[in-house]
Image (tube, rainbow, N blue to C red):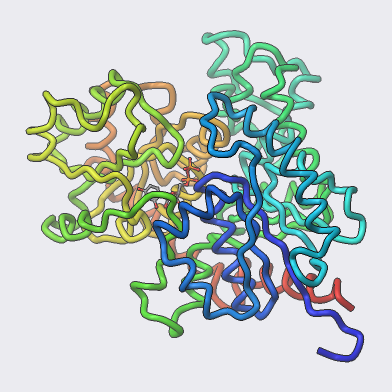
Length: 471
Ligand code: UDP
């Protein structure tokens, strides 16, 4: 450090949910590897789960410039029914506490900047700390972020609200960078609300507008995937860094440093069941379909049975992630289906997903189209069947099927015939076509994070910009 020059110190704060913590920890590791001092602030209950189920303590202990800090979400482990209760608590308890911690120097040297989860922009008002620039990290795709950002315009144009079920296939117009791609049913799920002033819809819109006001926007995406949308967003926001896919980016920068197996960082909030990898070893290449609906989706018994019969009737083997409590009102596979399940498939509570997708036995991914899962599938070169449930997932699945052409969209449908048909299409009838495009996209993803690639260069630019804030 030259005389008078401060050491760059970045405070990173993810929203307390699996997909958010996972990708922001990867960002934290990347920035630490580049020599920046990092404080990773986590909601206490999330941090406790992470340290219980992963090796993050030892993984990060090798970085002297890295520290974990925790803060309460104000819920004291109370179970909540509604997402809005968490939001309210974060707003009324966590926000003032964070401000206090910043003022009292609890994080060590004053942070040079805060990389704040975009979902949090309602928490720390971007003007609240004029001396600490806020960079907004969006864990969603640029296409869904862009769709959120157009909602006020769509309401003004009269294109929203959606006028019932018969209106769902109407094409939406006037969205820069994504002309005529989305139908009503592909808009972020809250657009299905009848009242355009519903707090849920307004919350999503406010976050997006707040993100535009931050010093910079960071996306976990890459130029070859979302170039036109990123260009359109760049004309509306002064500074955008597209630095993804973060898991591939991290792996590339770690290669040579530690063994490839351990370079797959597990940031899970549940205990990983690795036995499924040995089960996959016993199956021929591209013969198994991987089924996971992420860390939040809960499915009903009827839906479970439709998927189950659809998969069994396809004749393909399946590896299915069934988190505890993810099947409404049931504790695991219903008794009458257990025997056949053991014959045709394998069930785990939580899988090492990146490793599963990279396994040669996997031929397709039946997914809820969460953004992390989508990127992980792309990098592994695995075509998808998409069954989106909420938030950004509706938009992601449309892009997967109709723009990138790397999967099929099963949106708003859940019956065994469709499941069987789609499994057969992805794994047989349309295998070559879908596999060809997803492998091409996987290659682009890897190129983007290698030296000179678009995401590599954006990350370097971001690190330089952070360093410049200290001068
Ligand atoms: N995941 C995992 N094991 C599982 C299921 C999911 O490690 O059995 C990880 C997955 O790799 C991804 C994250 O959980 O990184 C889920 O994030 P995503 O954005 O796809 O969906 P969300 O959980 O936020 O709905």
